[in-house]
Image (cartoon, rainbow, N blue to C red; front, side):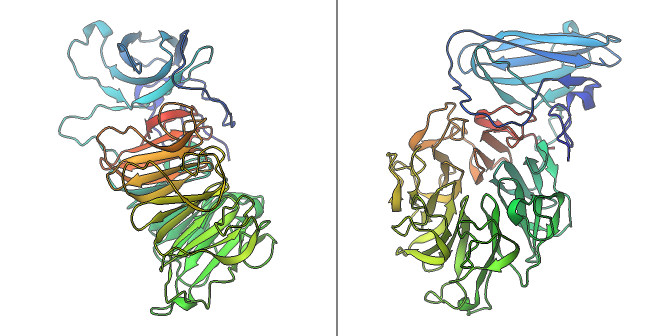
Length: 512
């Protein structure tokens, strides 16, 4: 599959589509980088230019507004002359930092605009302008909506999910995806059967969906068999392929190269419940008592036949190389890699079968990262364990923990967790989002690249967050206004803003 350029990605409405021009802003290849730099650099300024070709018939005026973190906004107008083969737009020297960029296009000369409304308006984006670094910006223009028309382009977004280098929006129709698996840097519809999708879990290069009928479907690249037997190991598919499983499944989770799904038992018989996993198993993350990889789903040992006081599993999670399940009585099971204590059983011993890990009666949800795990308790507190070298444990230290340790400094009770590779986020009952841990690529969303050892509230204004998801190095939220915002690493387009630029604060996803 070929990756589309971010100026003309599949499914986007770009300058080329609406104005008859092609915009080349040098999106670059989706290569992973480190040390992206802070959004608060001091010193010199950087020039940003845009090259347009095939100027449309009829003179057009494009007005671009750049607003720095502090100071006065810069408004520049550019006239595109009819018949010209090319036109170069130079924004000149801009202040370093996270500049907000938007635009408007008019079917008139710039001198004749007056107070008229623009013909097209651009979705706002945030551009990190740094000294000595070429800044790239891609604006998506849309027809200017009359006041009587809603500005929400997608009104049926139900929730979001993220994993690996991918982001997803679950809707009442086909799910939307963007990032590595979609080979796109703006949301596009997931191809496949029309059966309603109720959940999506993603690994590094594959993703799997749970349908309303209880079937499981996977797509992407199937390293070690993580996408199931329907896709050749090492091969790939952009269209979901059904995983051969018996029964109706209700939960799904994915690690780096493995996937797990939960099948409840009959009513009043929780001892018949089962978890099946497939993919990489070098650390026992498939839970079948071996370390042999399997593209074919295998049943996790230590779950079926154990009633746990009659309590069914109510939460399924996965880290990079470990797997997790929370029981209805609040206790949890874990299996797989445990080299830094991510299983929470007080040891660093890998487990190849589901192992009762910690005596706590109040855990309601659990999720894993690269080598750490976090759990949400019934009282809204969050507890983490395992690796903590960059603050992913949220307790104010960089000390690894072999058993659950409380996150400190949450400004209120939490109701949902989203765990990345080395960062953690919680959706609070207030509708705010707080994140902590690794931040070199903006995962925390606080406009810095400083690791955070305790939670930091992300500035989303007065908007209320309804759903949250985290990939390996990025975070996404769905707000009450049905807007989706992402931040963090963007080398594969997982931010969804039409670029491959890392975002150090909330950036609007370009919904179609």
